[in-house]
Image (cartoon, rainbow, N blue to C red; front, side):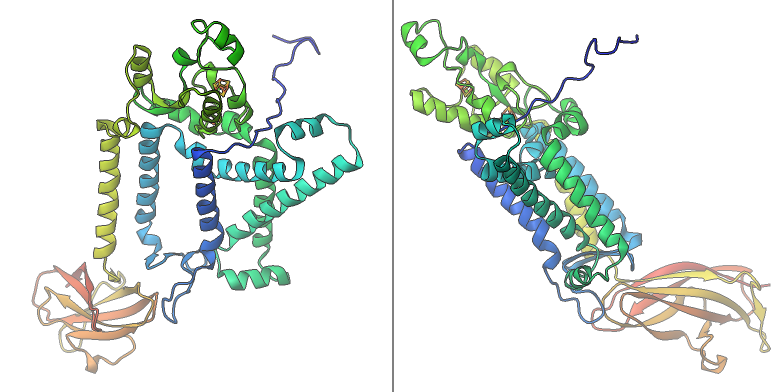
Length: 477
Ligand code: SF4
Ligand code: SF4
């Protein structure tokens, strides 16, 4: 139906959120997680890891040009991408585990949107003051002082956004060299474009959009509603204890009528998404628990027990309503569903560790020439030709021996040597971190099956050894 112009707004205008500073256990936990996550993000590309002279010494590097992923002692080649897929699956199951145990803890503590928004809000308190000062400044007409504060805030925000976008590109190239090239103006255009895009999105999402990303843009809150159940820990206002709300004075006058909530609004004032948890569970609650800190402080001031707002499962909330004592949090975490997620997560992790430990660093592949399929030599023997690829995944050259199994009397030589030097094996040195291609000829006695299955083998002849095997076929007239 068409709406007459100006008759009604289809979308509610955003109400400004000015979260008040708060101190307490969960706030300090958030500081610690913020410090660790930001330090990991900014410091990681600068960590070095010695892999010898043939490989980069950056501890974590996504080397797109050479199609390698380095992570400390682990080097992943393109054909090993399943390890990355395994890591992504583990991350997904880890999120399921965390959500079923402690609700939206990821959103409240470790999500980049939360961490950067928290940082930006802290900068805002530094430039504009706490909640009340921010509200006054937002309502004040533009003046030299307001412009100065806004410029100071936006400049610091921009600096953080630039540092965020700038750090990202260092994961994809040698950080010290790229940093030098970047400031010298000689880095690749894509580096400048990436930094520009990430600077803009960080500033926009963390500085200006903030809670709107969590409430309207991110799909994760909706997905989580399917994962939460009555045994998941969520931030809960214990209405059976708090209602009816009333001031301390009113409660003193009529103690039977009023609950513990003194309606001070501190839980709303500190909320980074601007919601009132007393209205019940809602998609805007990222489970940051700052309202718990705020309310616990109020309860301490008025001499009432802490935990009017607290982490609590729906099941425990119902039991507490009936008079049961609060259950220790640890007991709510250990239940079949979380243990099953943990078991799957650990099993995948253990399988990946085992596979990483057992993987061969030398492998071989072979493709037979089809034209001609075989050649009869002057001495009557039959010759087949193959393109053999030996892959060395170590960051150092490795001597190898290529041989065949299941082809009696076979003699091998390459196109770089005369047939007179043919032998039962061929030796080569495969350069570090690369694939050596050998055009290999095999001569075998003419009597034999028209199609004979055999296998190429490759074995590293250095101290570490290791090898691989590749099935192939020898063809006769
Ligand atoms: S902080 Fe606690 S006491 Fe104050 S309004 Fe919120 S729930 Fe009530
Ligand atoms: S209601 Fe409480 S836990 Fe939820 S987002 Fe607001 S402050 Fe954080």
